[in-house]
Image (cartoon, one colour):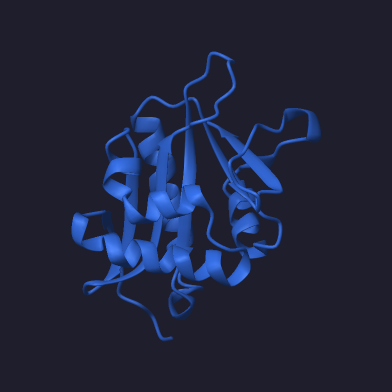
Length: 164
């Protein structure tokens, strides 16, 4: 795809179907939908926005080509830090390679800082090589076996953190 004229903006209710479709594509293709996924994708306002989260949207003239969200971490350790969690990062395959994922992640980290977070956590799978490489480039480090947190996701085999 030639250069895309995309912009980053905040999620609106009308973005719900695109947010769900982008994330359902990679989850269904690679792993299978889990209960937590379905709740967040079907009810982003209730499960992400209302509890204090934020969803970033990459938009090309009304076409949503990328998304990502950040929420107050649900399984944070009792370490005195304020944690937020990156969830539901997705870029349309036809729009990959244009820096969209990096821009979405940068915005989510900025929101975490603005909301007083000391650290950001995410769960992923090492099969998602491009995503894992992006997280490493942005300063996330993989948790060691003794540091791993409880997860609601069967697909999660890699947890990463970023200290802000």
